[in-house]
Length: 362
Image (tube, rainbow, N blue to C red; front, side, top):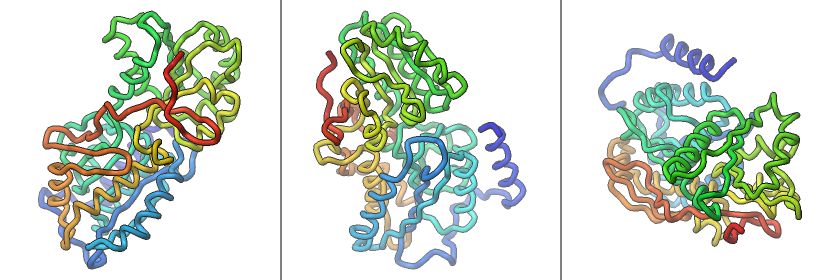
């Protein structure tokens, strides 16, 4: 079933099972454990969508079992595998709205905040923190949405600026996923803004992978900047589309912000020529960007909590505070709910079995 069909099914189930939404703030549920601040993390721990959420899960579990237990109220973490399904994510938000057993959410999957998701967040009326890039939120749900990763346009700017000159050709490789399409548009917009030659777009969607290597080979020797958009798993498995770096490969290969350390470890011979964007500070601490951001999301929510776990007060504290996290320092406002300074974005590489800050492009 298509994504549109799954979302439609989810919304049908919601409309059939839910009472008419109230404009009043939700009342605490009797099932809410006193003295706790309940956070539900929605991750992809199975399914084909990347990046997988194991690193985020481990980081949040470690924080919740140590720092989270020393807080007042105590942080209670619940992790749900949405298995690459946007419909399952929507249903989990609806379930939590009905049960009243979740005070806030961390979303660690590369999802598009479309009308269906925005409506679900507006209904649940709890802070929802996204650990992967989203645009600045708008509409009724925006007050509950906080982005702890750089905006897609800021990431695209860093990627395009990494090219040696404005005349360097650009090739965008898409995987057919929604995240890939969003990154394609963002990178293309920066090329247009700079007056650079229009980048060439190639598809490595599943139905075209068998012929992709042959079609791509000529571009790997032209000194081009090649952008593999969307989750790296689309290009590393099962056919290892990303080209190995050798004397004949002169292309600059860039992967997505969605690339994590597990993906990088599978680059093999392609590692010397590949770069991807992340945040500066986690690299100096030998942490992955996604894991560090997920930890920050949990710590930020805990810092915003109070004894009665009031969602509006928690939301207002996040919006009005500056939070010094592991990955970066976040600053939100009433008009800005994406809180990462674009100057914190750096290009990363895989060297000697770990993620490091990349050297300048040749």
